[in-house]
Image (cartoon, rainbow, N blue to C red; front, side, top):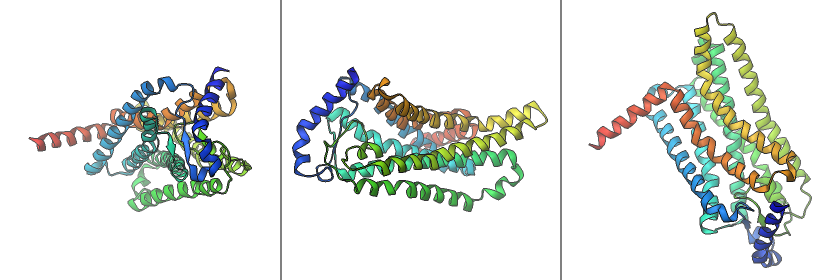
Length: 336
């Protein structure tokens, strides 16, 4: 197939330059080489333009969102604290991937040390799990606001929010720290080329000539016990929310209750649907879907939600929109 030949030629090109290094030592010492997007090498300089634009927009949009929430005391409620956590994770996730991808596109800087590759892999997966946990916390926030409004402030105190943030970080760390050791225990004796723009767990594991079944099963278990469980709990939360909303006496009350969840639902769909599509396309699409499509989807996934999330909340949340206007108004007056 054309995409298969393109990938093979790319791998051959990299291996011709780097096979001596791999023969003299293993991948741990020689490092790894990221190919970028195999099959689209001639378009990478053009593809870098929208990716760079989205990355800059993600930094700007989430930066403004975080500043608005910090600068406006009335936005220090639980929902906005969780939103600032989501924005922070989005900025870090896109920053963990895009700079190296753009360096590969623009400068051909494809080399990355083995420890650097492990570090990038850890932060990408860590932040993905953290993002999912924050969305779950936001779902529970909406559940309490609609199903138990009188107990909302009593339950979601600053202390509880702090514990949620700590638990989010701790869970992400506990889940994603073991893969570092699972990868370090492997023996690497193959060409050290990763057909991707960034390092991820199974991409590194497949460089090994050891048995990687433990890595495969751990990766599957980690995905099911983190993101899979989060999806189920988010769905359960919204089932309870819908049941409570449909028991409200008037149509206006139902519409008002649902409108408070609109932004969160959009963000949830934007986060989980592309992820699930990418997973199923990779698992079941096989060779019918070109490799470069998977890589493009992966790159879009780490930069597109961070771009759109601030827009969704800025447009749909009156308090954030007003807070942004006030913040920029103060900045404009201060500059005069």
